[in-house]
Image (cartoon, rainbow, N blue to C red):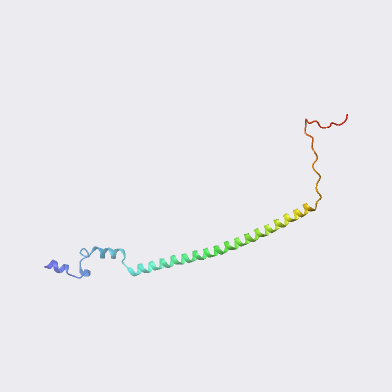
Amino acid sequence: MLAKSLDDRPPASRPSSTRPASSRTRRRRCPNPSRKRQQAEARRRAILAGAKAYLALLIEAKSKIEEFVAAAHKIAETNDRQAEAQATADVQIAAAMPPSPPPKKIPQPGSQASSPAS
């Protein structure tokens, strides 16, 4: 009867050896739950701030890449126009020149070419 009355006590008044293991384990792992919650919240805020900073860097990098691509495209278009103008000028110059005479026949060694009179 005495043992039964001892076991019927509320959990807080029982000796620690008779408390449920889960309660002891929970208290050992998390002695101050509000402090743990605050630490977790602080970690969450730090991670979120880091992610926002990284996102800002990515947005800035994207805009710089777009500017670079636009500048490279503009340079390529300018180079194309200059090359086309130069090619047009070369064709006009070639068209304005008189035709060149046909090439002279070069005698091949060992052939029966007319030899100079001796």
